[in-house]
Length: 263
Image 1 (cartoon, rainbow, N blue to C red):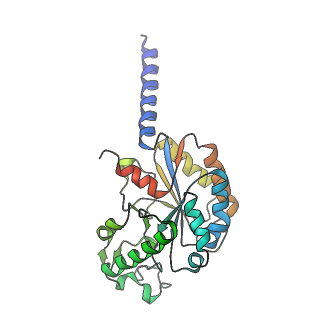
Image 2: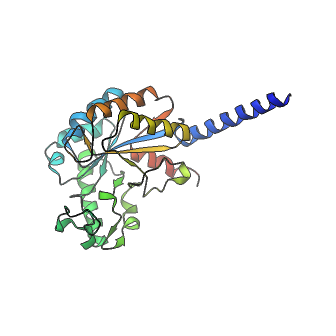
Image 3: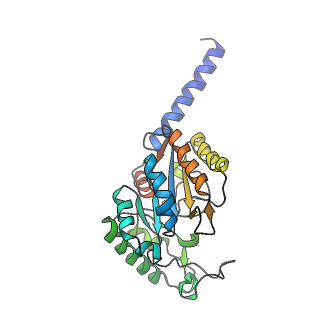
């Protein structure tokens, strides 16, 4: 075989091998995407769910059980779960560490720096009971409110592992399977992002053969962290165009998949 042909053959063989390995990582696809939505917002039901259902994508909704849009629209959330979306746990009342910079808005009764780990765990157990009453499921994932992973200055990560399949954090990266920490899964907090920025994240995930997690709050309003509804819709349409290369799934399915992978 001529040197140039041998070189081209080697490059082609390596490319095929890498593509095959990436597909093995992500349920037969090149890369994985999980769409997650925090805080039980009305806009999730009104804006996000319709476009997700139109294109057949399943997402994770991290519900703060004590917030009105959860209790006031229980039947709608029940239908969301019945249609294959995950109802994730985002606590009862979204406690955050008020000792951190910029946290003056935190209610003193919900200041994690003053809570014990036991109190936080009890809070999450009650939220799990409420969610199971809605969707009938025992396995789900958790999202750390404000990304805070300690109560009273003590990490509560180990204490919640019996309650969940995994947990989503707030650090930003596209992850290979061996880079995923199941109880601190990285995500991109979306706020004011353009269509081009959202598409670039998807393209990067495909190029790297990794896991990309979107973290949305407002979708067309209702939260200071917000993405324009039209831009969100454009993202879903882009995922549809790339679906042959992407495994788009709720966090619980991705966490379950990763738990089965060789360590």
